[in-house]
Image (tube, rainbow, N blue to C red; front, side):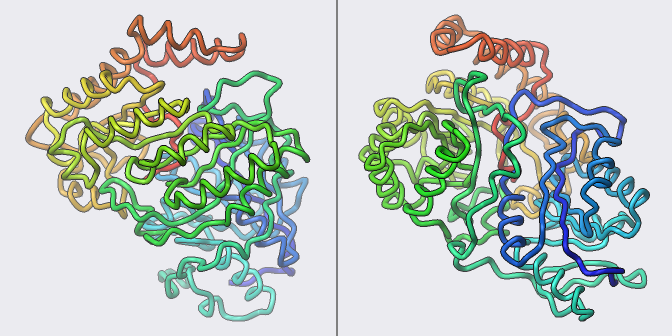
Length: 480
């Protein structure tokens, strides 16, 4: 497959949800597509001009997206695909190819990592980039510009004469410190609304990623399999420099780290906090991590002192047997770390999953009771989703009752002997109602709202829970 002219421009686009049905679904919260920052940084260091259009957050319709492509005139369009919105991406890809047949269309992302054979059944897709795509995409462009055979490039998949071609998998980037500073200016044309901060219109929010890899082995997540279990990270100095740059250049005062497990290296976090304290940066920041990597009061106190406002914890279950089965810690360890986090003055979010291996109605009731007793500042409840590439998929693939990805966040897609699929859906609504409609909880939250804008967001969330319409994991930058 060749292009008619040298590749000089790449256009990355996030896909609006609902696009295949001619609508654009609104999101209460919005998170910058930080993965495109990684890709753009690497490509622009090679002389390739990049544009990032966050069509999902901006709620752009199809014609607006196509007009933006027409204005930029890219040689390559890149889409990042999450499983639950695969059909929207396939629809957008087809429309792009229909309007701009000369444009090379590439796809990456979590769905591509394990389902590139399926993705390539969409005739509009020219190449798939499973696993880490920065180097693969750069080398593909260099290869095509030189007229060479793309089979020389690791980490590629495509169809040739109707046959699937897949090259050797791309190994993880060993030293991510080689990546240049991220081009944040490409995302500064929109004001994002974070899930993790009390936010007003005068606040400026941005998200970034400072590491890859995950040493955990969660049964419902594929990050350890796709990014490797080795934790690769920017130095504390590099992270502090990125934070200061965002603050001084763009007025950003709220930063979320989208790393899977930001506190994996406690020493790095403590060093980062020391640098932030020395520089006197007045920032709020938030992150996600695991209980096992946050059992350090010194680190938590340092984080709080330098502006950390919230930590997302994947607790998953409140039943000891289920926690052991899904390779998590004990309820006592969870209580200890949540208590330490509260002592430091940092807010906690706990995420729980119904329908894990071994779950029964009784164990799920245990989870709900534990969540209410733990009483974290916010909590979310979701149904187990057996995404390809996870251990959960290996366990549930013979129990699937639907392979329609549109159903993956709306309905239970597997059936086990212990309960009917509809039970999970009812449990999800019940859990959110019982957690968020407690008088004690409502009064505590009202005291933390700092603007009418913030109040309106809380009202929208509350109505969504009450009506049973919000059925997803809040802050779900990790579709695993």
